[in-house]
Image (cartoon, rainbow, N blue to C red; front, top):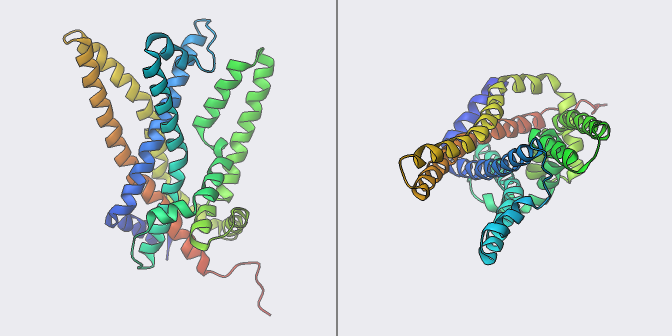
Length: 302
């Protein structure tokens, strides 16, 4: 199957399989919510930082305890932590389900068992995701913020930030070599390190085909840009609407309306990004299945 055929086939599978899209939308929703939390926290920190104020690690919790009844504040903090845990762990379950169901669809098997696939492969997929955590821009920004907050002196801060930037680019390169590691875990049941080794071998052996597929998927990079823009815009839209509506409506009603609109925007964005995520992941899954059929270059027939 040629790269163009893989792209077309992946798009057809994405449009045909509602279960795949459901897992993709769930993953995109949780990742968007986590990004919004991280962004809101960074905005609050830098706002205080540039005003010369020191922000503690539990600054938000202290504000809740100060202005809300103790029971309500504790309930909000516990709910917030539970939601963050779900947002961190559950996308790995979604990833396992998407890869497994896409592979089943390709080989004409019944497309079911997404939850089993996700839970069974959760641990290695989660470890692989966290192993390349520094290849994400949000992780780089968060780690940089922590360095600025808890280290004194810009010389020391600059040194550690430079180390972070090096790890960022190193992780991107390593992540590329392990592009098929998740597929190897789910489809071939390889161990984490075995999957990384298998992926690196496939990437190096078929670098031309992989790069061509990657070039065809350049449009997917728009997802990153759009996601970043949208995550930046959502808090601004909600706050701006609240301030605008508060001039003509009661404050509580304006906040409620703005919240509903914000939830609607998040839902629409999650559907769009979930669709694109499933498409991209299906492309890599089909590419892995195709490359598996070819003879390894280190095997010599005698």
